Length: 340
Image (cartoon, rainbow, N blue to C red; front, side, top):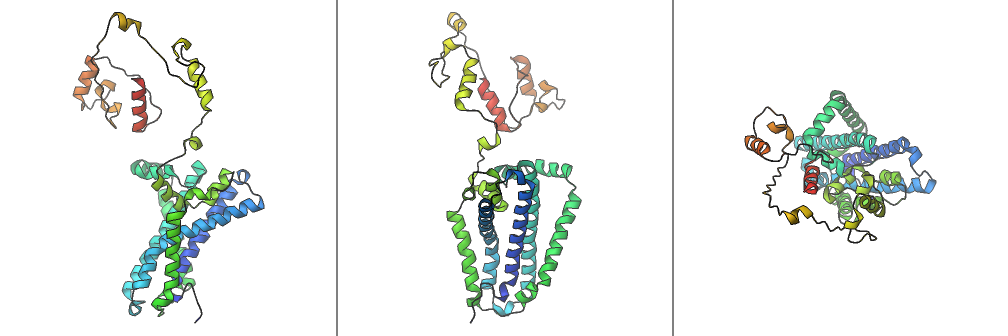
């Protein structure tokens, strides 16, 4: 009997994998054309970029195949092509394609803004879903995008039907033994990727754009979700530590520095007034997450929902000229802590 990795019963799965690989290749090619002047396009570098990308594409799509592979393996032959089999197959296939289409379109918008594959910024977007949803509604023609997504889906379903993948999947009696090689292969691949391969390993080049092209967006997204980190140096302007310390020292009185010549800003500060007239101020530090100034009457709000805090503001030393380096809670906490 001739060996086939994809017997007739797995025709739809084969088509599913081919569609993902083709779309992923087109996305990678689009990004290459998009930033052609930035990419190292020497023959071996660009060739290796696409080879590494293909390997990560295979690893990514293999994760998606596991549930359906297990289903194909355990369903009895007598149920092949039954109503239940068709409902499950059509539903799973359509959902899988929708996920791919949405992710590829999202990659285009993400690349437009950051020139990168998905990273922790994309993960952070999902955390703040309301803000992102509102931004999408304001920035993009959502009805047209949905029309595009479902149009692509119907085209792919039509192509699948033309390939007779549905017919071959439903109208055959492939044995358990014949399906086993594909199941084992596409279970081993995600195990290898899950245990041994990281998204960082796609970065085999000195050129950042080649590194990003070699990655697969969906795999990068879940890697960022798992690692929960973002490279500070890649996304923020920085200077050398020596230069930063030099700049800070220039703002200090040199006679206060404990080690003026070292890379250190440790200082000895003595308040002469407190020596002559000791002060014991009653300091109450209140730090409440997500309590914006717009809710306080002390800042002009007419909601009158913080009477006690407003009373404290009127009866104490009240600072109303404060700045943070961003709108997230942690930025405000940094500003408060550093000011004490």
